[in-house]
View (cartoon, one colour):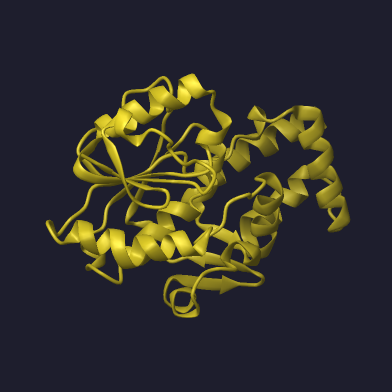
Length: 257
């Protein structure tokens, strides 16, 4: 049994990029055994065979493995401001924007940005960098398969245009997936790239100390072009934006001076 589970871990990593070895073994093995027994399988080997060949089995497995707290168009009013005010403003001075989705989790955020931008510029002009510390959530993001609950706020026309329905799940189409590049990054320890027009980092800064937040605001500010925009989550207002060369342009949107 231990050998069979190790083989399962290796196979899953090759197939999806998700490394089950980075989760607590006892807990993960129990969760998986319960899942495959409920579906009538008798071993990890038998279960993997169907994961490999049946999309529905793979998708259910993925949904159980990564706890999905994100969703497309999360806090839709803020995304509306991005689509109707911020992006057109940025595109007024240049045709191609350099965009970074920091702490992107399972990918809903960078894909949302790509879908929005596609209403304003040709897809070929869209390139988004998406980073996260957790390789498992990024592997899930690169697959681009989501449960229906993640799409609650997605406009119907966008859903039809950029998603393919597979049972009760949705797959982001390849045209949008090609616009996003995923890369591992530790926000506190790693250097930031420069020259961004838009940096989106939402619902992660609340987990940092005030000291760490201040360091990150400085790093994000330095990574933006003058006139670039920093978009934060709805519980992450910056109370002294001027300290970081920012000015407020809308709620939770800050412009680099």
